Length: 395
Image 1: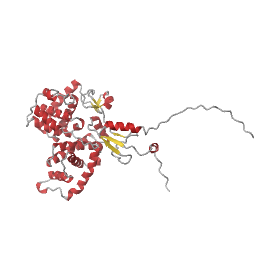
Image 2: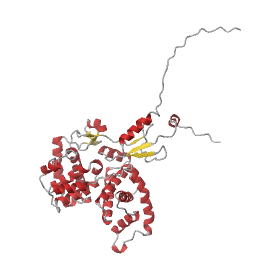
Image 3: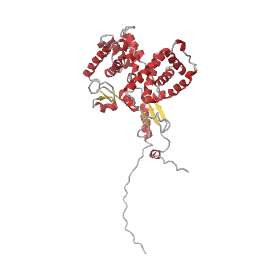
Image 4: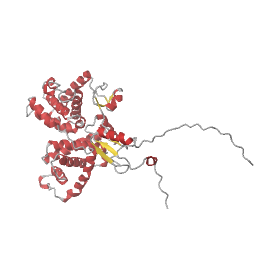
């Protein structure tokens, strides 16, 4: 009979079942965490840019072919970005991930489409009219099952957080209030809001911040007086609970996209490279004068800011970050353990159950309460024992 396996020290100390891991939803992910996630999966900058732009382009073209609303596009791209932050590009095909993200977004936004219909629409975009297929074609059968399997990973990557943000609605209202021409500045602002999803800005900023940034950049591209759209009137930052640092970060994210990947965007080919460079220089000068950092900081990254870095990256403007600090949302926490595994989702069911939670405060309270039952408390006592003389043994 084979000897029984020796239990680990952790299992010896723990009494009862594992308390499980808690994956807290992260509605906002700032640049430092994005950089860390990409570093953990060994994703190079060049490869990341290619996969991100190709996937978003796939989603955009397919949703237009299916006549899906822009809100489905917004949600699909956010799910696609979050999925890529957890899984290395060697684990999946970027086109399959894009299809799974669009399939998941169709359910969330109540614009239901079958996985076969999504694959068929993309297939028909690549072939002529005579070679078009219907969604019932058997060649889509196995591929559709793969997309359905990736749907679970999409939901886990977003921590089952079905809250979605759509900046276009607010942006249209702001454009109307500011008197933008429907066929010029307003159309440019709309296209900017679509191109913005080719960056990580929707993961980092609120709806109001992204909408205000699109309005301002559209005004600058149409050579309108920029000072009329910066923290004045209906564009007052205090009214929308945002700040110049957040708007500036979104503007620079968009300009980086247009400077380095102009051909992969909607607005980029309409303007010369010098136009975007001139706007970038103007914003850099403003940021240097106001000491606005390139990226927003988490509160836990405040120590790194003293070394002249911002969110793990060198400050673009050559200045120390001084933007408002944002409290970091905890990731995976496990009551009763000091440190959770690198990816609790990746080993789900092996070292304990993973539970998904939206409220970070509730997760912290639960952890502190459960920790009371998993602490090893030892007490030491000193007792004085009198020395008794040894009795002689009688032979």
